[in-house]
Amino acid sequence: MKILGLSSSNSEEILSTQALEFISEMNSIFQPKLDVLLHERLMRRQRVARLGFQDGDSFNKDIRSSEWRVASHPTELLDRRVEITGPTDPKMAINALNSGAKVWLADLEDANTPHWNNVINGQIVLKRITEHSLTFTDINGKCYSLKDPSQIAQTLVRPRGLHMVENNILDNGKPISAAFFDAGMYLFHNHSKLSIAGKAPYFYLPKLESEFEARLWNDFFVISQAALGIPKGSIRVTVLIETITAAYKMEEILFELREHISGLNAGRWDYLFSIIKTFREAGEQFMLPDRDQITMEAPFMRAYAEALVHACHKRGAMAIGGMAAFIPNKNNQELNRSALEKVRKDKEREVNQGFDGSWVAHPGLVDTCQQVFDSILKGKPNQIDKQTQLPEHLETVLIDIKSAGGNVTKSGLLKNIDVSIRYLISWLDGSGAVTISDLMEDAATVEISRSQIWQQLKNQTEFADTREICTPALVKDVLDQVLRDLIQNNFEEVKVRRAVDLFSEIVLTDEFPLFLTTKASQLIN
Image 1 (spheres, rainbow, N blue to C red):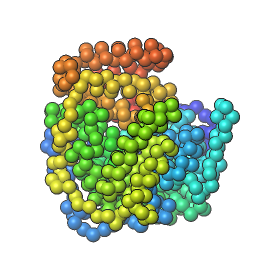
Image 2 (cartoon, rainbow, N blue to C red):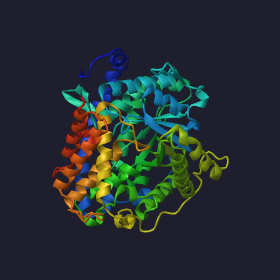
Image 3 (cartoon, rainbow, N blue to C red):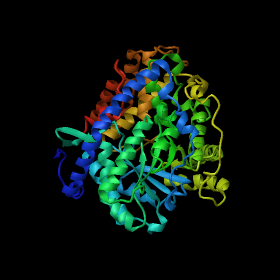
Image 4 (cartoon, one colour):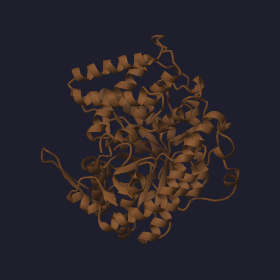
């Protein structure tokens, strides 16, 4: 293997000869299989966009009618009523682990910019957490350290998606899979100490599009366990259902990973992005309204959530709800009260639908989420025993986008562009989790924003508030307006222009870029 990234003491600790040999072995086994599955993604998208979900793209009746359940859960994953997410920044990691949440999602994906330093330092932080030695001192001399091991959240690692490559490591002259690198390095460096503590490596798997991709991950874990001497079935995963194709295959995904899976999670923004990406050229009936108008009460989103709970509880798995992205503002208590009430109502919806836990983005939301779930669970660690009905006419309801109501506005266009440029400025600088207007944003925000604009351009959509038609010239005018406003608000002009150029390139193009992060990563490594 050839390392292109700059060497440091940290990278030498992670990129040991033995670790690289393990990664190389896993990559050589699984990269050819992954290449086939990524090609199948393209073929499936074209087929589904043209013909809808049918035959092999829809439910597997044999799997759904047979009796089976996922493996029993390890003790530390029985109670997941509050999960906090965030990047592997040392300070944020310590605060999340000490927050009182049951689980911390260590995000190596959408909340992390894959700068080489971030990739390596993320593995260092995870290793220090396993060793219970992670500390951080800020510029004012304030020290941060982990609470007692019994008082901190359980770590689940989210590697990068199967579509991503790690450009800083070449194997046989080609970049290796970022997903296998992230997961493999965590396994290699942490499995032994986790075993001593009576635990095992646990993961969140993003962006799966089919049960065949779940099978690939299952094979990866089976072979990794054998290679590293980890007892078979010790690794546990939770799969994010954040693509429309995966939403049709939830039981099938559970089945393929049944020896290793703990649950499924409802990832809202990426799910909406996937709907647009899949049906981007299928006409006005797949046009989403402004993203602020899409709630989990929209019939197609409610059906998605209810189907997830049904699939999980039918098979003995956990159903984990979506993100509360609000970041408390210490200077605006009225805003905090209003936002926390919205968070409370959203979590009440989830727990009443049957979810076993939910996500928050900030330690200040942990208590609110905990109280809601406590009020229903009443001492139980979860409500897996709560069986629910599968929504009627699920195959059609899931893609009944018009059921959301709402409309498309120019003010929505302006907001999509403004938040995207602000986020990309930080992302290109190395920060993948960014607070914008009191919300924690990650790459999924830009994905849905830019895909909405691309779709509006494709359909020459008329804005409900101005009656203007969405055209490239109009989008360029709004981009210029945002650029001027940000520069006037003391953003560095060179950084603003770099973000605007990137955003323009992925929006004002005839060919839809499948992932922002794939394109953007070429600018930072």
